[in-house]
Amino acid sequence: MEQQLNRLKQKVLNGRQINRTEALALASMPLEPLCASADEIRRKFCGDQFDLCTIINGKSGKCSENCKYCAQSSYYQTEVETYPLLGSEELIKQAEYNEKRGVPRYSIVTSGRKLNRQEVEQVCESIRLLKQTVNISVCASFGLLDETEFEMLRDAGVVRVHNNLEASAAYFPNVCTTHTQEDKIAAIHAAKKAGLSVCSGGIMGLGERMEDRIDLAITLRDLDIQSVPINMLNPIPGTPYENNVRLTEEEMCRIVALFRFILPQAFIRLAGGRGLMKDQGRKCFQSGANAAITGDMLTTSGITIQRDLQLLQELGYRVADL
Figure 1: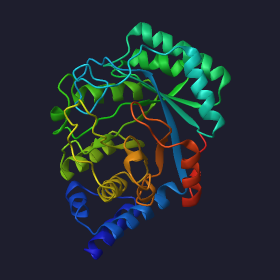
Figure 2 (figure 1 turned 120 degrees about the vertical axis):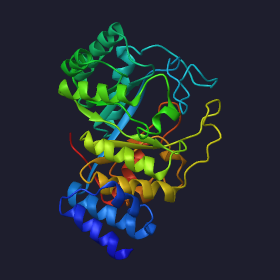
Figure 3 (figure 1 turned 90 degrees about the horizontal axis):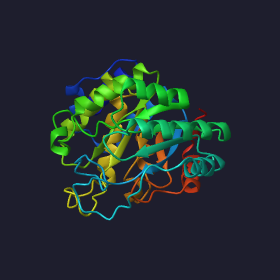
Figure 4 (figure 1 turned 90 degrees about the vertical axis):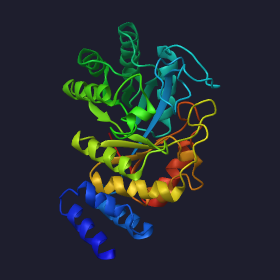
């Protein structure tokens, strides 16, 4: 096994891609050498750069989609707070808060299949005002928009769009039936055509197999995604996944390491669920992950910015300039 691991590591370090069969072989490797190899790949292609971002829940609840993991879906009885699209004052206030604490990237995330045109126009005006006063990179997660709407966001000052694929193409219908993964991929292509970069990843612990996780990573590679959030399911009471067993930190480290082998140059981002880990993701940051969402999540508490900055300093990372 050690010989095979070293061979596949050298293959990636030499700029070549591993295939699905090779990735499946890596999935059964001893954890510690696998993670060490993934971290070596990360250092080769990404150095000590760490991409830190924060998110704000810009519109909450009453979502028309039936994603089984989500507290904001109108299909499920949860305790999530609901409110319409936030105005400029609150969006700017939170952006200023994060900029002052050293976070270079700020993402506005909204519930629902997509923002309607009036809401897109409203949030674009907020972003224009924000960019006049706050020196922070703005990202957006507004659902299945079209190319024209993505162009409006770009012109307002958005640089990156977030749209998670959530799971492999084969497993996605088990997660959501009100839209398809093809709908998501079409939105990703539209965002790229509009000149925006794209952040896209998935949620681990939905009931998927390791093969599904590998297939998701390969799809992201095929789409040339360079910012890849890996969420660990936080089972929310009232959702269909409320009784799912949480993944262990060891399982998350293995997933992160495999994603690093498949996506050697990407920022692999620990996102939702990191606060469930006793070490707050430290081992994952030594297994190939080099990005994170800091601060509060959409409907669950996160980890404070100050604690994250201290952790990154201890690990020898440098927050990337944008």
